[in-house]
Image 1 (spheres, rainbow, N blue to C red):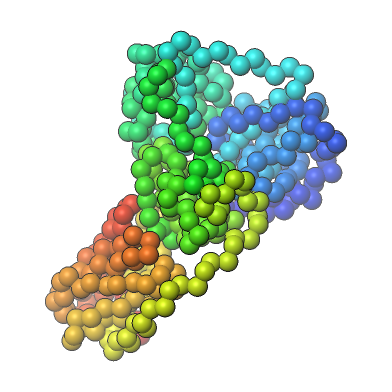
Image 2: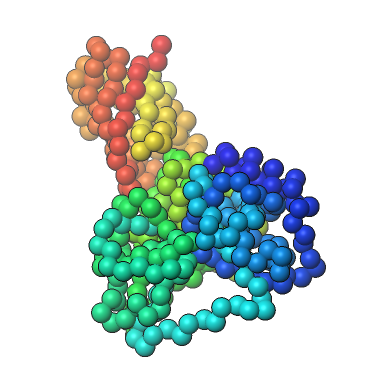
Length: 384
C-alpha cells in the first residue's frame, strides 16, 4: 500500500489535467473492486471520489479509491484490470442519461454484503458490475453473487459460507421478499465506511457477519479500525488513516464517537483517548528475554517476553501500553522442554494463547499462537 501514497502524490500534482467544474455533470457509481496500471490524471483525498470530477468529458472513465484517497484514470472502467493495488472502483455516468434502475423481481432482490469470494459452485454469469436482478428469485434465496468491474458470477453457496476464493469482488446475497431484513446501515453504532483496505497485525477482537458490531465502537475505540469481509470482521487498534499495507483488503470502517450521526473526515485526527485506568505496575522479572515473531500469512508481528525459568513466571514487554492491562497465565512450564502461556487483555476481551517447545538448550522457543480470529506459527530466539 506504500505505492498508494506515491500514486496519490503524483496524481495530485497532475490535477490540472482533469478540469473540475463548479458543479458535477454526472454521478459516480460503484462497480466493485479492481485496479489497472497507469493512465492516472488526478487524485483527491478521502475514501470516495469527488462529485465534481465526474463531468461530460470524463464519462465512462474510472476512479479507484482506498481509505486515504482516490485516483482518476482515463481508462474505460470495463478495461481497467490488472493493477497491483485493488480498491473500490467507480465509473463516471453522465447525469443526462443514467441507466434506468431495473425493477426488482417479485419475491427477491440482491443485497450488498461486503467483499469476498469462494471457489467453485458457479452456475451462471452476467455482464456488468452489478448482479442481474432477474437471477434473484425464490429458488436462489440465500445464495451468492460475486461481481467485478467486468461481470458477475452466481454461486449455489450460502453467502455466509462463501469464503476462501482467490479473486475477491463485491459480494451480494439474494434476499427474498418478506425474509430477513436488509443488513443494518454501516454507520450503526458510530461505525463509518472508509473504502477498501487492510493493515497487518494489531488485531484485538473479531465478530461474525459482514458489518461491524455497534457495541464494539465506543469512546475507548474512537478513531480505530474495523475491516470486514462477507463472513466476519476484525478490529484493530490502528488509526484508520494509518491502516495500510495489509494483504487481505476488505470493507474498512472507522469508529466515530458512539451514536455519531455524521462521518468523520477521512484524514481527520482521531479524538484523544481517555487515560487508561490506573493499574499496579507489572513487577519486573529476572530472567531471559525472548523476541517472538507471530506469523499470519505473509504478515508478521514481534513480541518480547521475559521468562523466569526458575519461578516459571512470564511477562510481556510493552504490550500493556498498546492494548491495556495484560494478565499472563503460565499453563505449562518445563524448563528446557515446554512452555504454554495465555495472555489476556480484559479491557478488549482479547487473548493470545502460545504453545512452545524449548530448543537449542533454551535458546529457541518454537510453536504456535492462537487469538480469537486466527492461528499461526510463533517462534523466536533468546536475546543476547
